[in-house]
Length: 118
View (tube, rainbow, N blue to C red):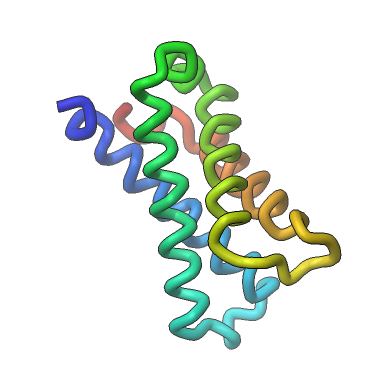
């Protein structure tokens, strides 16, 4: 029942992680999109959403997710871990792409907070 209540927010978060991951992987050059990029971005977004679902059952994180900055921070952390797990970086150092993707996803979640039913 808890997931049904949060499905719109989770879908919005999935789309956010997918789009930012896809753009970071190709470094903004959308002509490079291919099936491999689509698959990795989908797995990254799904992994981040699964972490958020798990976090909803952790009382302290559930309370944190109910604030604007907390929601963005927790989701950014999920995107960071998921991106690190799915594929290696295309940037300068090993965690650079995952950090950039997490920051962009968190910024979008922060700016769109409250526009989607929680």
